[in-house]
Length: 353
Image 1 (cartoon, one colour):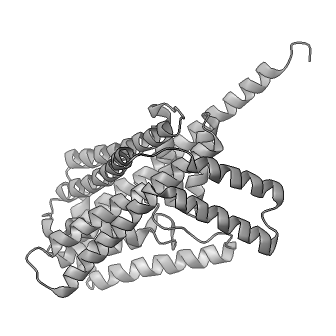
Image 2 (cartoon, one colour):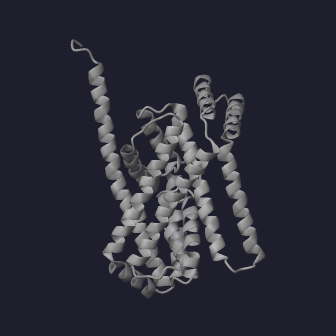
């Protein structure tokens, strides 16, 4: 499941995007080179990947599919709280397409969020409902990943009395508490956003009055959508379950390549890789996720060959297969939307026109 944990810079020129990709690829390649000083280790990892257990590969695909289905359920739950009813099958197809966009298109998470926003609007959600859903899901995903990363740190530091470890745990708790506060008191965040919008319009004159008034109205309506503590807990639980299903895909990847799972560090490695991959260097964290995942896994006893082969098996499903299936789904959704639009236009025309 593609994470949406960091906001990218907008409006980059094409050459800047190319440079960003090259830097990201170089970072990922550098990590792998540091991990595998010997060419024989890399060849051994590829050989181990090629002799993988197809049953566990199928289990990994199923776990990733469950992650995307859970993400679709999360969207449906949040949309329902805002008064919009969107069928789960359509949201699952949207999740597949959204994952492919998030893994390949520059400008994440803005592009995939805009794609989902347009889909929500086509399904009858208001502008406030669609915007509130994206905002709420983004925060819930961040909380879920923070909880998993915090748990990973605690497991990795089990039995350790290092002051640094205790400091990391406390910092993680502060981050999680802050994210929960933002989600529960989102009205304050929306008021701040509206105030910043007015200040920007006063200083620069943009956005212009008509667009600015629409933005202000949408932010105001978003603040009126109720979200109780019970609903907040449910949303965070579903978001965390989606991450856990993605982690299950990694665990199946270990079994597929016959590698031992380093239980003490696998959760930490997964969290670190997801956070590292969320930085806007290359789409989907290509190279960065694989490298950081393999480095941490190897540090906790997976072995260089086992760590790399497991990371590659995970990414073959989590990244490459997701891209292939997602873009096919995106094409089908686009074609369906075009047909529905043409049908509506045809029905609106009078017989004698």
